[in-house]
Length: 296
Image (cartoon, rainbow, N blue to C red; front, side):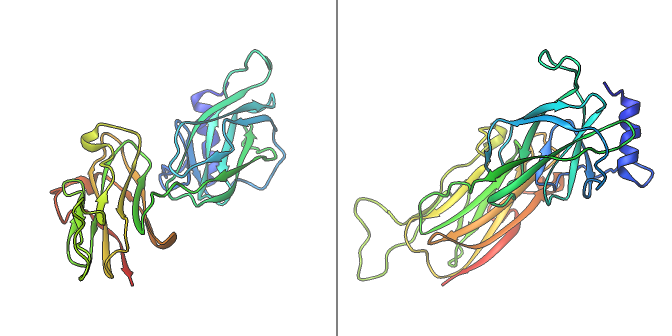
């Protein structure tokens, strides 16, 4: 198995600039715990060792999914494995593991993958390439994955915030009348226009925040909040903000907001919440303006 000084030397080779990259890979669509991120494409040379076998637990993934295992077996000369998604901004290098009982002479790998909330729906290729101590890459072992669109709640207008770490982010939506919906004001009722009268059984066209996810760092794992307008929303400009209430011990959170009107996307934005974004008051008007959209 590769020792730490060998791994450091390999990373210098992969960096190609005399030093290993300091890029933590937080903006990459693929995340691998305990691995080293290398920006850019993998080398074109394929003269190194091969990946003998590679297996995922599920060929369908959701944006923001975590704890997805990926494991396999490498040629005897391999000391590491490089793993990345096709078209991503870089790849991850993982030290090869010890042989298992089924292949007692071959190194193995076993990683836990996560996928960014910004990962678009559709097919994507997951590439794994064995690497030796000289930095030579072998041919890719490609696994075809399908990114499924995340489920959208029912409603005429749905504004969704998703993020990818165990953090407490809050969705704020301001409607054209200036009413702000967020965790401490989770609903707002818009009376029907005359001559209709309010329903005596209750406001069925109230816009509502469906859930305050990870509130107060009590982690529920949902990492999603939706403001839902069950009936046609008022025309005009809507402002969507993302407030990083707390990172709950995490170093960052990748987030994405999207607005769906009558089943069609009318706006989306993505960003990263850092420690600086958690400072200040977390009240009405808080957060970063992520999106402004006009509803006819």
